[in-house]
Length: 313
Image 1 (tube, rainbow, N blue to C red):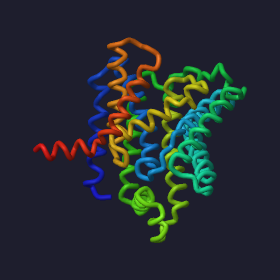
Image 2 (cartoon, rainbow, N blue to C red):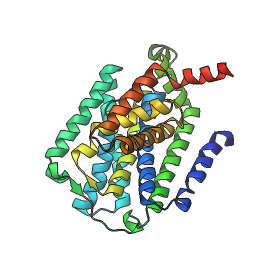
Image 3 (cartoon, helix red, strand yellow):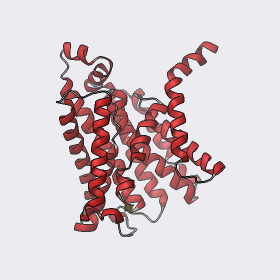
């Protein structure tokens, strides 16, 4: 990568890091932290779906694995929070590889692959709801212990900076992928899998690499969620809400681009909060808005809008 590729990401990280200096309201910092966590999950989806063209409807499987392992190892076995966070990322990556190996070796793609990922996420949700180690339907609560050594902070600003650092790292990783041989092979697979195979691309290896990396990044988002909110149940960790939002953010912001998931996550949650302010907290109103947004983006893709703006000029 050249400095020209890196500096926009570093500039974003530097500017965003100033937020806690000017914003001290807990509500706004909560909004920013939650948006960044979801942007991280969306960046994970973007690597597989945006660059690789393998649309997943079940990224909750990776988010929930990272979240639950972070929580369970701390609460049940007394493992250090930082170690559990890394273990959650690794476990999510392994789950991604297993799902990919089962799906891609069987030749599943398109809607069949999407449904398989959705099925895995639902199976994990049911298991987490039934297993005593996860707390069953009651969920699991991480004890409050606000020390940096325990990956908890008295100030929301410090946790915001940690999440921002990981999002920035994910952006750099995505940029490196975009400029790499693997990135070019991913795009080739997305555009025409048979043609890519004909010119010597190992399609299975490329897909497995993409889903493993994608799952690991999404698992990191799950671990951050558990560590910040300190409570999980199966509906939170493996719920369809995270699969939907991880998919929508890149599509709205620009799938297959580096900053698309971040832009999409900000748009989604700004609009959701604005809607709740206007109509109140009606259950499911945010999903209605997200569905309308998805229809509009599919009907009027952002690239078509940009072409129209350039034509008008």
